[in-house]
Length: 171
Image (cartoon, rainbow, N blue to C red):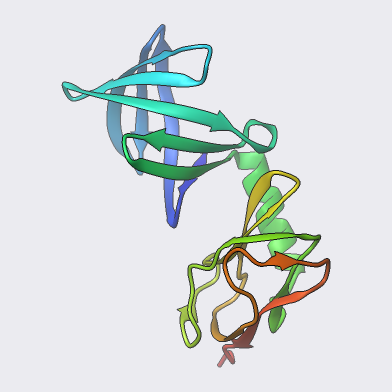
């Protein structure tokens, strides 16, 4: 499966699980951890003699988590093989528009890009929150940010243009 942690994508495979002892590969490299989960979403992880504590806040149907660890927070999306296939198939059917619009009313959480930035297919252009869930909006083709029409914290309306893009010409 794919694990998205911020802008990083990791290929993770569960090799073996025996109680709290978990063996997996991350991008082809073996990794062994001991994980103890508590009912309140807290977990303790032992890896290479180091101990880590994390708070997991489950989102969207169990495929998305906010992970809080000692002064750091991460948004993690779990993409299983079926979801990856459906996303890739959907992406092949949809061409990147010259703008990103809000699919529903919500709030701008973050804009990790700036005007003039060159984006590659799959890059996150904006993060919105709607109905208490955060969603990353990614571009599906190489492009350049032409204009950003909103700011972090802004409330947005359904179909409001958020970012204008200049698509790269192929050939």
